Image (tube, rainbow, N blue to C red; front, side, top):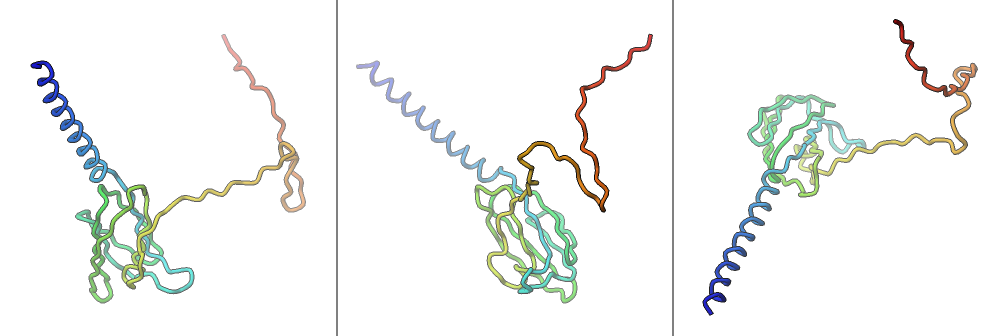
Length: 166
């Protein structure tokens, strides 16, 4: 009986330590993950909002940066919840807002003109779209035309061994 009563406290202590360990992991994941915020000051393609003509932007307690129409820069931050402070040069207007970056996102695009205009959402996911060049199915290209002059195909050759001089 004595051996059975000693096992229960060990199992209880191990279970509590395991739960504490998992809680610390979750806390570190939420507060320690780095994110990149792309701060964008560009006009909308459809003209629904215009870029801000000169402003200072501060994310959390980082140093503020100046932006003019067409500018885009980045801020690297930790954690999920952030605050942004925008000071517009022309009228001295200050806009402050808080936003949360989704857990699965490493990079987000923050449109400052949307924020100033009050358009939601002003923060969205950002992904790089690479264009793949279409490759011909019939092997290497046989030549390219530039202004009517044909460029001959490049022939593959075996690597040349270096010449040793004694």
